Image (cartoon, rainbow, N blue to C red; front, side, top):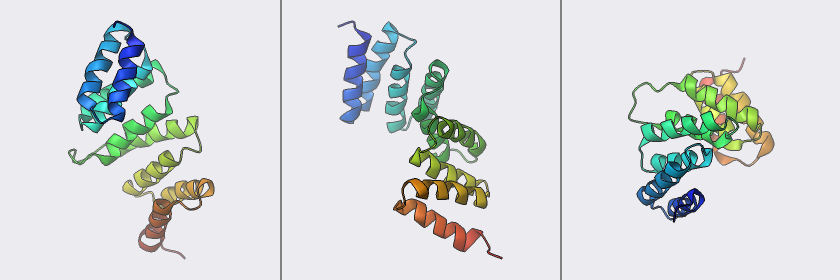
Length: 162
């Protein structure tokens, strides 16, 4: 078997079956055969992220974006790593915001990115901006429970009504 697509397909199957280390091995073979295919780097990043190998995942998401600057999920996933890591004392939230802005530029109705942006703005102390992103999200999905909860928290705890 020396077809890069076959290795990638098997790697994706391994990801779907939570066999992330096996997936990385197969995707590495795909990349050895074709090193300029954004999809291979993206899925290797997904597997690395699942294994909490965040630095490797970040490198692969960055490579994905270099090869395809329209890969919305790569921007979102890279931002999500920054926002969710507990092993970094002061994550660069502004870099996450830049990635989320790009993801939302590519897909303005990307609900997960809207919620992540609201969370990022909250972390930056930009409570009104966070609220704006939640409002956009709730226009798209009026029953989004987490968005409603964060909106309620922002309004009750952080935004003083005059």
